[in-house]
Image 1 (cartoon, one colour):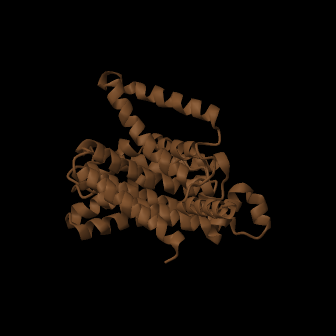
Image 2 (cartoon, rainbow, N blue to C red):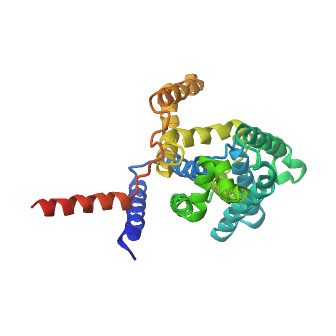
Image 3 (cartoon, rainbow, N blue to C red):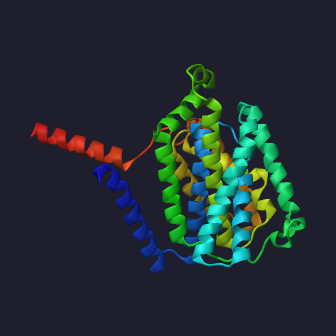
Length: 329
């Protein structure tokens, strides 16, 4: 295996072993361990939207709807067939596949729209899904409808979320670096020019949309089995803005920025919960809105501004500096 390919895998393994040891030794308690799991789930969801909006330039406001579809489908599978490792894996796959399939069915007609029109169409889809989830008990009492779905087996663990987050980032990175990914970026930069150059712009927009929504469905399945309870309010259209903020704040076209911001965002919200207390919990919205305004004024291009930090680049710069030092000596 090439050194550049081995280094990221080794770094992920070292990070996993370090975090697993900190949790097992009690340095990271149960509460903050669960917040870490939620941060990784949010990372999977945000990486999916980064493919759609950050790299393909499709302004989507319905990401939470696919997150909810994946959550409910995965929870239904484990409720129906029992909670063990095999059914959990099948449930996650079913949640991701359902979200991806629905994205394909609605993406083919609406992805011909551009900019604000696409945003409004995906927003409408999110509202439709919220209404369906509110009345889901009419399809099956197990789904709970507006009362919420309870009794979901708690199967999501740190091991699952960590490696699925790594897998999601790895898949997104490889897609972005492939010829298909570069075609998506070309569509984002200038769709008319890409069309004139012979690219099937609808095909590449649909590819990014389906893959990104499937990741949201996967994240939803993990979320369902982390908290053992689902409620339609967790997947309304306002939740789509949270993920959108993460992608924009991280920097459009930057997977590194998306990952760092997703993790930081979840921990920031929980830190504000502790600082403000239950009495002033609603003020969190004011605080993080101010953070958003300040960041947009100081860095309108986002934290990373489209750049990436990779071990390949770090190792390459270190090798270059080492070679320059030996040459000078």
